[in-house]
Length: 78
Image 1 (tube, one colour):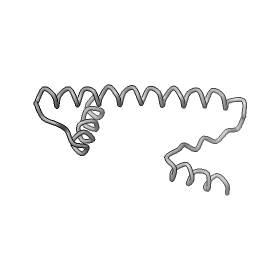
Image 2: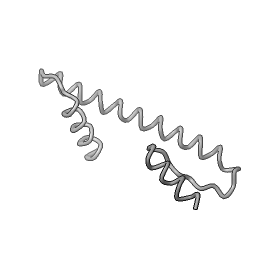
Image 3: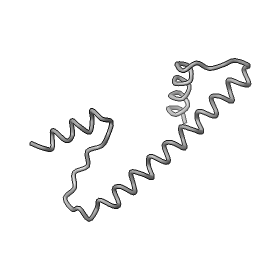
Image 4: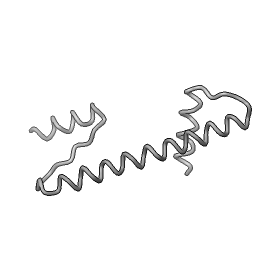
């Protein structure tokens, strides 16, 4: 019963629900999650720089909607 509550809370807050059968695995889960977050932040920063560089080359500015669209496009296409 608590599992559904925790899963719903994790979903609602943008978190993750990770059931643990053994608390000894907790440290590796925390470290792995932190590494994943750092990697994602680096990728997003690189994509943002690329989009801004493209905008500069075109001689125009990029609004938030266009920036979001381009970031999604680049991340989807690789």
